[in-house]
Length: 108
Length: 116
Image (tube, rainbow over the protein chains, first blue to last red):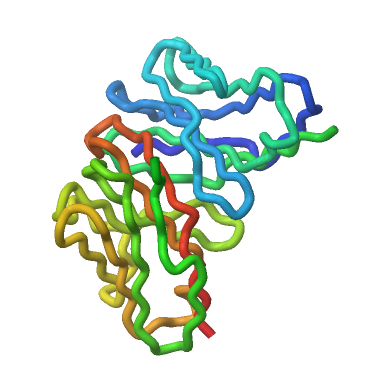
């Protein structure tokens, strides 16, 4: 599975958009980009995934570059409850391999 | 509907003892995964079941770890001769298909194992 690179931590002001980047330069053509998050002391939670096109759901938007080598997860109006570790995962075999993720701290 | 259920939520044991951790997946989910998570780290893949069979056990660290899913539903992770380094949160997840590019996993809250 392709490896991803994420910044270890980010801050965001409450009510502002949070933009979390992810690099996956070795992604293969049949591999999807998945985003999960993990709030303290809970199991990881699925957010969104995509292959080539940008995706949006009730939680977030996923922007994938045309060459698919990087992506950005956007939380449009971050709240304090969005404070969590966010994992970007490239998956092609049904087995998710988690990295260290980005710790997002939403501040009042 | 019920989510993924894991028991016990906390387990404290002594070095050398045997431990079983149980996972009840979401009804109808054919794929089941075990991960473990140490403090400050991302979840580490252990094993993946498709139905009753282990489709990928490449993450099991050694032969002290074993997992079963005899009827394709409930799974038990078994750890023999526990060591202090086995202390971690053990996470279970299930998904509908578990096939390639179907990575929407539903995780339980985990079982926290502490080996003294």
